[in-house]
Length: 117
Picture 1: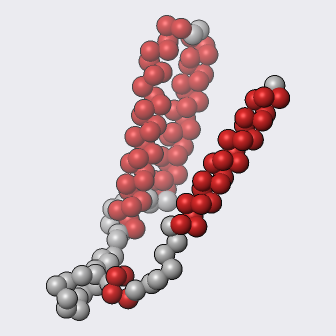
Picture 2 (picture 1 turned 180 degrees about the horizontal axis):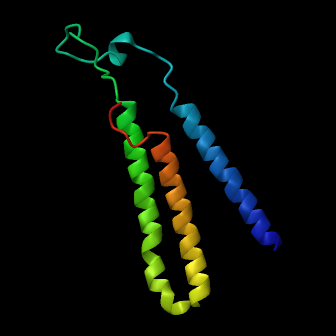
Picture 3 (picture 1 turned 90 degrees about the vertical axis):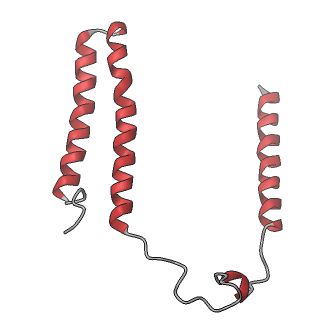
């Protein structure tokens, strides 16, 4: 038990040292105006290189990602039916689906699913 504790502390110390060393060595001390500006054949850029990003699009993408993960969690439910009793299966499945539907209803009521207003 003591050997495991010593190895854990040694691993923690070594990884902390490596992260600290990497943080110190990766610092950029010289901030150059030319390097931070977009390059356009040596001329000043005609417009901003940083285009505005639609926050609405980002919100829809995050909601899609959440529902994608939820579907991934729903898929194994069908194959588990043979290994569990029916009552436990139904309670667990219904509780999970109710939580998903409540989340969907909340997003719908907050108009998060509307693309344009």
